[in-house]
Image (tube, rainbow, N blue to C red; front, top):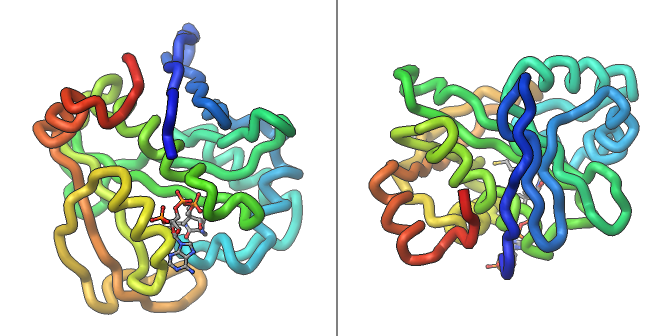
Length: 202
Ligand SMILES: CC(C)(COP(=O)(O)OP(=O)(O)OC[C@H]1O[C@@H](n2cnc3c(N)ncnc32)[C@H](O)[C@@H]1OP(=O)(O)O)[C@@H](O)C(=O)NCCC(=O)NCCS
């Protein structure tokens, strides 16, 4: 449950907003020093394949992924108690819509943290960033139909179900998945924000 998101404050010369802080987590930019923490969760076969990517085989591979993340809009989720990176949230161009202002959000979390509402907290923090800072007109998200945990995160974050592409996602693992799709329009975001849904000031 999201109780009190304090809100982010930092600006950097280079990349604009660089950190969000909530009750339990910090969302910040990745560094190469995070490779060991990434590997700890990304080497677990229950994590990546549920998001469509392959299990990491080495810390070096995690490092290469972080190098790629540094080129994009990717956020490390840090547990405030341990100060370890426990997952990630990424904002990408929506590969199905492809027009300016259309974004897609993806996420993964270390298995030992599942079921505590952490990803819902993280995604509810990132949604205002996407609409207020990136000026999105639409934010989309999806899950493989068997991934009910992710379905619940999406529902709890206020996204609207669009439909399912049957055998619609050809994953890195070589598997083909039924892909359930959801989105939030800027107008829907505004309404939810007015209702106090996000508890984040930007
Ligand atoms: C999907 C994932 C991000 C969820 O993160 P999380 O922090 O556990 O999510 P939350 O705790 O906010 O919510 C999980 C919901 O799933 C529910 N849930 C837990 N176990 C479940 C199960 N076996 N089947 C169905 N739902 C389940 C929880 O009860 C909770 O819903 P509720 O609040 O209505 O009770 C995490 O499981 C994960 O990283 N999985 C592997 C990668 C992945 O699937 N990424 C998403 C790709 S679309």
